Length: 99
Image (tube, rainbow, N blue to C red):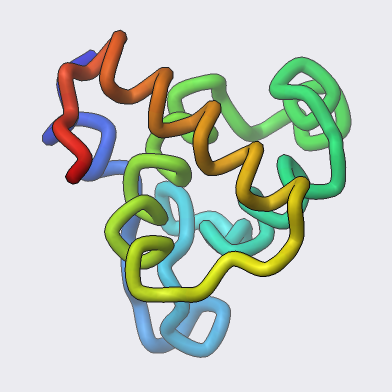
């Protein structure tokens, strides 16, 4: 799936989750998905626990969060590791450049 197609899964509606970016208009914010990943949950564990999410939703959350992550200071070692892994995945799979 192309980067633009993944990003179309991220929606912003002021009536859902106080206007936070969510996945496909569901009440799952991008922030929540990133927090689940940061907590150590695998993609498969998230998909098992949240049956209405799809693997592409997780990828879309990561892709959406990358530019935001560049603006924030990452202080937790685990967060930095998760971001590096996600950026590596995006470089390889989506050919998304990071500077």
